[in-house]
Image 1 (tube, rainbow, N blue to C red):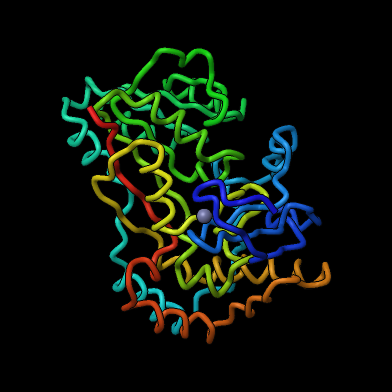
Image 2: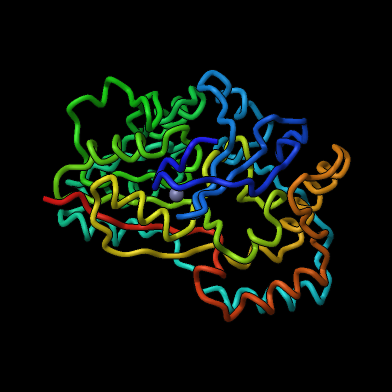
Length: 323
Ligand SMILES: [Zn+2]
């Protein structure tokens, strides 16, 4: 077992899922080790770069604009009460393009934004609406043709191997939302991001928060596990460490993703994955519980008033490349 890519610390066994959560087919890439020092989780062994595209050949993957979620049971009266309650306690803050443009310090129509691992460009479209010039970097040809149709500059590549068409370019804002955890080499991807932000420019990085109680409880059946598409598993603390190590200066951070944990569709999806795990002989790491209505009420009571780090399933950092 090699040392941690972030801090060099020793790693130990953590989670092990015998199947791919989206296809329910057996996978050799469901074993995740964790650094004893900084807590960064990593798939071990890592797949090879040639394996990666195959993991995304799915009938319904969210970057393709479709949902892979199970429908779940019809909403009962008590489900509505629960969902309303979780909505009231949800103070999550999604990434805010207006605030990022303000931070970049220019009028919106003079701002150039690059999204690394942009998929179908959901975030870029929000910047586009505000008048910013937008560009996306993604390995998926289907995503790239969608970007072109939407009037977004499309570049083929990854964080580790960016398109040559981006050579020498810099942007006012560079985003990596839910893409760093997909990278084979996150530190290399962060170095790419650093080189593509103009000095003084803004970098947005959001990933699943694997320190939250939902992930700790449901781990391998959680939406945020999703190995082997997800290859690294961050906490707010070690994500900050990675961003700072890449040279950025952190300005602020935010958390998002709460009320969905309790909804019937989310629960059904987790139970669907769990059934697949059971059919394939179970997990060799701790088996998560069935996500029953009772279990979800327990989770809601436990997390509604807990710290943001324990409550929300996503964490994002807004940082700056020093001028
Ligand atoms: Zn570490």
